[in-house]
Length: 63
Image (tube, rainbow, N blue to C red; front, side, top):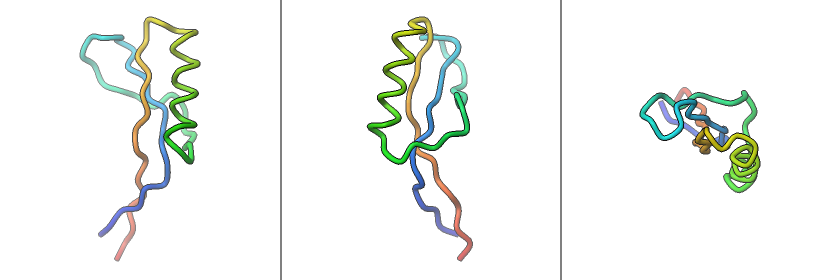
């Protein structure tokens, strides 16, 4: 089984700087990390108490 990178997802850490699991903000997949990061930066301005990040989204391929 192999995998293909399909884009980037926007993640939020609702605990701020405390340790807790990152969760998806939406199901949207951004085509580039730059587009995802732009959205993360906008959300950081509106919600400074939360941490936002972009993570890789992979699709598994059956060989």
